[in-house]
Amino acid sequence: MDTRAATGRYESLDAIRGVAVMGILAMNIVAFAAPFAAYVNPVAGGPVGNLDLATWFFNFVFIDSKMRGLFSMLFGASTLLVIQSAAANGRSAAEAHYARMIWLAIFGLIHYYFIWFGDILFLYAVCGLLLFAFRNLSVKALLRWAVGFFLVGIGLLASGWLMFLLAETGHLPPVVASGLADDLARMNADMGPGAASYAKDVAVHLGGYGGIVAAKLGEHAAEPFVQALMFLWETMGLMLVGMALFKSRMLTGEWEAARYRKWAVRGFLIGIPPLIALAYYQVASGFSAVSTFGASLSLSVPFDVAMTIGWAALIMLLIKTAASDAVRARVAATGRMAFTNYLTSSIVMTTIFYGYGFGLYGTVGRAALYLFCFGMWAAMLLWSKPWLDRFNYGPLEWIWRSLSRRQIQPMRKAARA
Image (cartoon, rainbow, N blue to C red; front, side, top):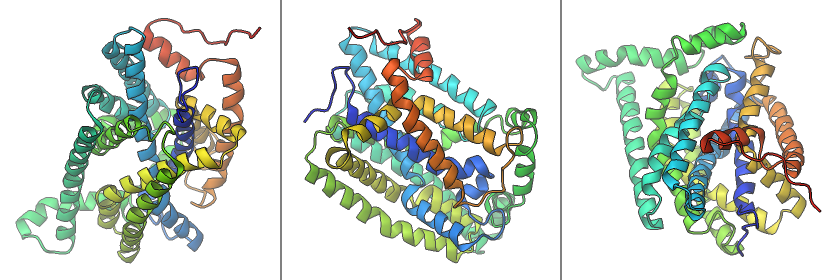
């Protein structure tokens, strides 16, 4: 059954986006509350308890990269939908698309420099500039291109990991190993157990707003561009998969429940065993910087992608068969306001944890952080639907749309007769 409403929106697509924006907060909550080293390495700040370690283990297998992957796939699907809608309404699809991406890049840089360092909007905008060229490809062609992007990304990062591993274990010629010594020392300082940079990062983020911004405008000014180059390959692959799944009607809720169930089972069966093995690899290494780099950024990628598709299928299955109309409407509204909810989460969480707010940065255990996450989820679900009952768009969606179209868009819904 086609779930597209009279408004031209697919409720199922909005609902799965709602789950994704909540899921990406579950992924990001550690990076809001502690140095990035803690995001990939649970002992970066020192020894932790069993509950925090178990929380990291669960997140590594089921959450980390999967929710970002889901968000990325939905961005690809939504981008294709916007392009198709613009063409159907007689507007220039290219103009509509590129205007949205340019403004998204600006929003992303503002987000990074002035709110939170973990921005993904700029990366999405850069990938979005490339996506337009793939809009007319078939499902098979999109998947072939996606595999190509994945292979390039995995190859680049895995080759770096292998070189560091060989250097660390003394299996490289001395001349080559000496050339990697500084990079390996820097990686250990940034990502290893008891990371040397950890205390410095905590001090910065417990300071004033000006100091935090100055650090990002100074020594970390190039970070958004470096991250875009580093993660473009994987993100492009995920977005192209999202476009393919949209064209195959998977993300529009038109598959039979049995088909969603089969894809969910396959995705989890492919992904879970290797991810458990990679988690144990990091534990066995004592969470060395080399092991966390390899497991998190390269070796896990194919299994993360399988899990992401499994999550998408499972969520669609639950939306079709288990969710009540009221629940589905709440989650879909959260997804329609994903841009607003994403940036609002950054503002709320940095205020809670940074020094200019409540100053909890670096003081809350990994497991306890999810109390803040659950509270933000509740806020998203509670406020998104009442807002959209009165207004056509979320606040930031309205600003983005008005800027992209160079015309103020109607915000308040017309009163019903």
